Amino acid sequence: MKFRYPIVCLTFLMVAVFPTIAQSLTAVEYYNRGTLNIQKRQYNHAIEDFNNALEMRPDLYQAYYNRGNVYEINGKHDQAIQDFNKAIELNPYYYQAYNNRGSAYKSQGKHDLAIQDFNKAIVLNPDLFQAYNNRGNVYSKLGKYSQAIQDFNKAIALKPNFFKTYISIV
Image 1 (cartoon, rainbow, N blue to C red):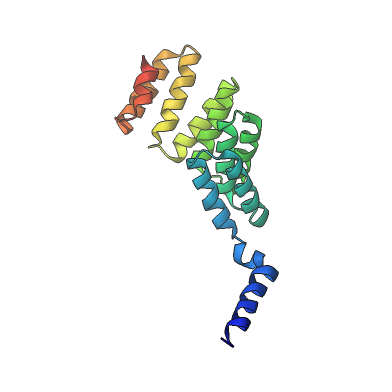
Image 2 (cartoon, one colour):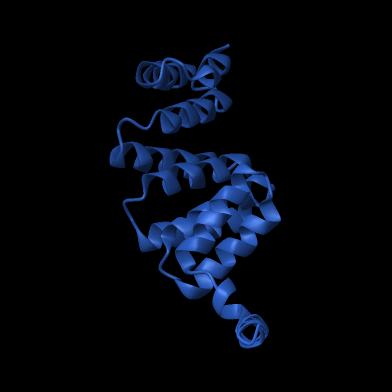
């Protein structure tokens, strides 16, 4: 019984005085939690986590990319584009960022910029079926149907089970 009191006091002292030590996360842990929050559709929490990660590691281009994705989901295209720009600035070979920035431009009706980004994504990764599908959608909106069909066919060749491409053709 003599020894319980010091242990209880020490435990209380650790919890009361050093709570942030036990609860502090690294930038990568914030980033990982942010991606989980996207999967759980808890977008405000995801943005908080990406903000925290970027505060600690401003070079974490994936956090800019994923925060941009959340902004795009929420219809905040300008903010999404800013984050995709930063991700590309930090990693000019990040083809997913070009593809998603192209999608944001497409949502704004900036078709020429969208096509440029889809082209760049395809140059960086010729197997990126999403970029062909996205570019095909833009070509279709512009009435460039033969180019659209070529892109849709390429997307289908790369990913035959991606149903959205079949819907785009119809």
